Amino acid sequence: MNIIGFVGSPHKKGNTAWTVEKILDGAREQSASTQLFYASETDIKPCCGCLGCSGERGGCVIDDGMQDIYTALEAADALILGSPIYMGQMSAQAKAFTDRLFAFISPRFSPRYKVDHAGKKLILAWTQGNPDAEKFRAYYDYTKFMFNMLEFDTQEVIVAGTRSGAASEQSGLAKLLKPIGAGLLSK
Ligand SMILES: Cc1cc2nc3c(=O)[nH]c(=O)nc-3n(C[C@H](O)[C@H](O)[C@H](O)COP(=O)(O)O)c2cc1C
Image 1 (cartoon, protein in one colour):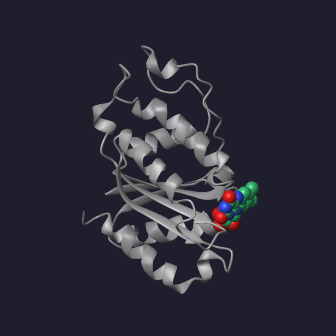
Image 2: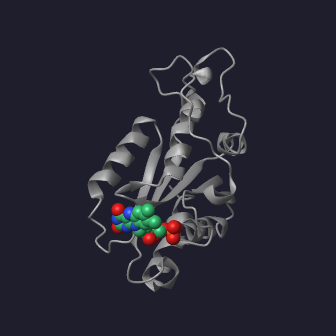
């Protein structure tokens, strides 16, 4: 099984990175191949809305770090998308990544719809300052709905509150994340 992760935080060693890394560790221990991309070291420009991806050529015309992610996603069975909550929503980095998926997925209403890209497993991993995991539930549910509409198969939605301590210092969280990654291989 091939699994890729994307850390939509500007911090390479922050809460979101740690959370996604732990999930991937669990999957790797079950012999999955994993690849991890960090927003902090990948140049991902916002979608420019040219709809070049809907034309004859297909694919995204923007020549940046997203091209390597498209290639990795092509071979991936699952995606772990991690983002910190900024002002009640995903970070701008995670949103740029998400918008750029349009070129890869082309939803069913587009003539470029790629049936072989549908059904990839997805884990959404959120970190937020607020300790109340229900605080942004409406947004988490909406994001899951949106990805399911794009025909991802959302397996888990993880929420880690970080105000009282870094994600890496929460022993309960560490115990939870690896089995979630490992579980991707058994579903
Ligand atoms: C600009 C900004 C906006 C934030 N907005 C929220 C918010 O609306 N709600 C919340 O609970 N935490 C908020 N946070 C806290 C982050 O979500 C939290 O610290 C997260 O764990 C950071 O992840 P990182 O270490 O991977 O960057 C915000 C942090 C920043 C920097």
